[in-house]
Amino acid sequence: MSNAMTLPNLVRPASAKAASAGALMLAPSMLPGQLGNIDAYIQAVNRIPMLSAEEERELATDYRQHSNLESARRLVLSHLRLVVSIARNYLGYGLPHADLIQEGNIGLMKAVKRFDPEQNVRLVSYAIHWIKAEIHEYILRNWRMVKVATTKAQRKLFFNLRSHKQGLQAFTPDEIDGLAKELNVKREEVSEMETRLSGGDIALEGQVEDGEESFAPIAYLADSHSEPTAVLSARQNDRLQTDGIAQALDSLDARSRRIIEARWLNVADDGSGGSTLHELADEFGVSAERIRQIEASAMKKMRTALAEYA
Image (tube, rainbow, N blue to C red; front, side, top):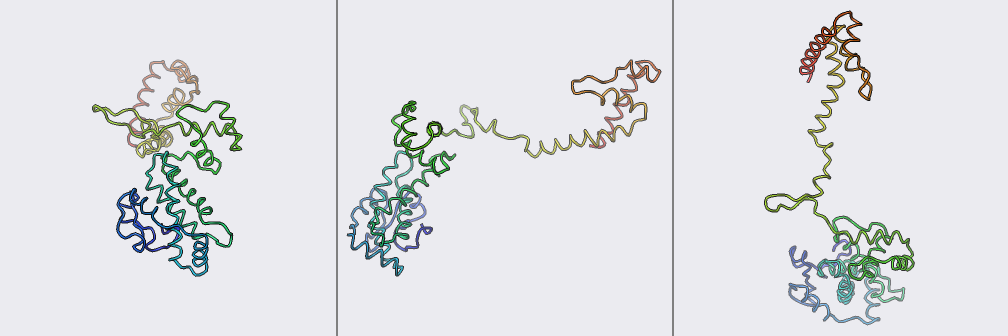
């Protein structure tokens, strides 16, 4: 919580393990001893006395003008019950109540740090925005592995649609139109966010049952083209098709090279265009069988040259 304000002995984790579970300890001067569970914490903060408007103004002025951390501590402690109340409204996202409270406490401390008592506004009205903003950010980071709302408009849709949706039924066209008008967004954006909220998380890797692994996205998401052995094999194949073949052709005599080029290298994309044995036989004045023998011998010599090149 140091990113919001340095307030020693204000609201601090009892231990690393307790912090992850949301167990907190208040300052010894307020409630001595460690609070080991969320129910005890809620009961403790509800016993902290509220501040009057005059007391709140005096403490806020003292902290703003003199950076008195004791004044800031009292302001925060007196509003911890507000964080508990706000966090309770977000339990429907399946996240621990204690974690929601801790995130809200960060927002509360940020609010105290920025609160200006000269604006004639109670801290409770000012802090609600900061508490909700911190809880919203926590929910969007942890509700799904893949973020469903990244822009300001999408975040607005996310939280409003969650509160309007009743049960598992999809919105009707009239409901979509009404929400779009109420939230001042396009109906397409409402439909898209509803689709995102309705889709569940899918495990990237399959589960092993009865000795067999179930089919999962990892099976088709992997890019084999970037696999190191595949890359090296592709590079080697490219070299064989260019430099290797050129070197193999150089190992042939003129007649053998002409026959190989005519038979295999002057072929069109559709597979046509290569010279026949009889066409080459007429060109060199020999039989088609002799052309076939020269071709076979040349191919054998080229394979030897390519093997040495590789």
